[in-house]
Image (tube, rainbow, N blue to C red; front, side, top):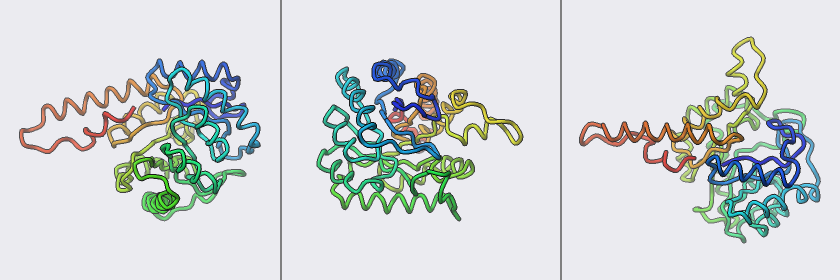
Length: 286
């Protein structure tokens, strides 16, 4: 899943694709680099970001969705507003990626249910205005799993089909670097939810902390793509359905290598031994 931020204040690219023409061109380039689908968003969800109004989000997102869809690109719309989801779907979007899992707008679930589109349900504890809110856990994996399960049940009750649901642990949302790393170490447990898993780690703060070491300054977001590719390979091995990334080529290469290693391990396994865990899932991760 390649990312196109149609915003002037993205943490990762600082508005490089704010113009509609530039955004469409960038989305097409991501597909050429190996993206299977392109996630278009018009509102920054970084901690402390100010929400844009509905009209502005529509102005940013819908023309880019229409332009990419007209070129045959599979488009995901990244929005918390039902009105934006509705118009983006009408413009050709195939999937709705709502970081609030339908909590920010009560009309979102009925809109998605009526459309029949797949819906990404992310772990979310509220808007991050003013900082990283409610990021306190006794057991982050168990609590995220339980809260995601409750949200999935609500989405199912709202009429979205079970085979249309994708789950996302919400790395960086109400979580510190340690929480993010622990969740990545236990992605296998999220399969207990019974739905495809999206991992969105690209360029995030926890990667900057890892690369900086105990005393160094974190590198800028755009210098975290190699680290993102490493996470992508790990996520593929853990059975992720997709990884959401800003720089596609490095991740596509990393996933190919991960898959090749898994295939080699399976091919040389002791006769009669079970296949390597994760090998059967890696094919689906891009």
